[in-house]
Length: 103
Image (cartoon, rainbow, N blue to C red; front, side):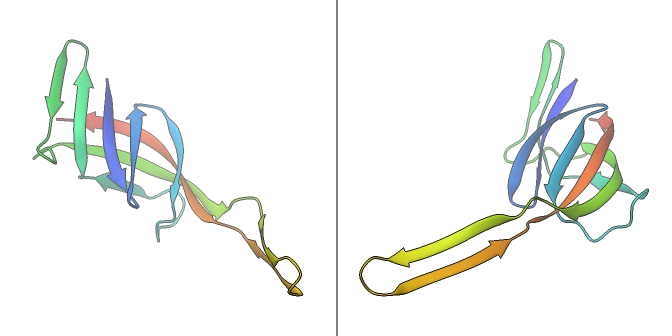
């Protein structure tokens, strides 16, 4: 059984027991969270599709940890104009473990 959930402006295909890195949530590690924005649930031969969301469906998950991803370098340059800008960025994330998917 797997589902498609929406969180942080992105969509994720999840199954029970999956570990995901999603956009940062303001929660402490070890807390349980519930996602109620479910787009679709696939259960063997049965498919439940929302228009656009499924009513009454939910996915529970546990927050494993929060952190920051590896640093990326943003570099801008215009040739022959003596214009150079260097900037680093670390995207914050929350790691979750999917628990139960319910329709």
